[in-house]
Length: 371
Image (cartoon, rainbow, N blue to C red):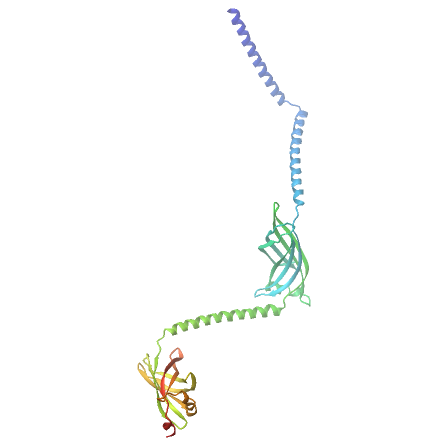
């Protein structure tokens, strides 16, 4: 038993000794790390730098590879063909730039935006952008019109630089932004130099003036139309005289005609008399007009009362003779008398009341004609 205890004690002592030796070794190595030589530290730094440089080199190679592949992707080609004067508008001179774009792809490509800058004599005289101008046709050429507006106020400042033929040097810069698959938005820069014709001062001042006058006249015509419609609507509700053609009778035979008398009853709603300007008449028999005429200044309509008007109608004997074959056994004939009673109403002015009556009238007998 004693020998066994001593043996265990010796093993425990040996284990503790090994742990202590291992701990001392670790402490010695950490001390060595602290007290490394400059050469060892330099070597470690260089090693780390070399590893970092290798990583950066790999990234650069990857970036260059992607850039190279993208550079080889076909892109649309564009050319600025021409710049021409188009027209003079109310506030500016309009020019038109023609751009031709060739699309290498078998599908259409959207154009995101076109930006433009027009320069003359070293100064920017117009700039702007055209958002969403359309798309490029698949596998073909697309002609794009780029309108450029130059305000008249800017053109006036260029007068001293204008040549005798009214031309001026220009430089037009365009930026055509398109959306390429995978690559994304790219901008195709375009530029063109040359001479463009400026509108004359006559164009600048005369045409806008005509346009302005036209615009004013159109607005005035619109106002007049509205006023007329308003007046018509209001007058439509104004109370007016009412008339009725009550009867047509044979009156007498004169030397050259047979006279008939139309009786018209007119009711005046106003508390003052209303002048009658004129009465026109047309007498038809057997579907044809046999006589027409007017009765000028026939008098007035009494205030707030009914006025009976006599409208004399003369039918020449020569006309009556043509009706003999249509006369009935009792010497009557069908007729239609149409009257137009023109009166002068306050505010409204001349107003015509149309009247008509159909029936039979007695023709004068031969005894009446020649007796």
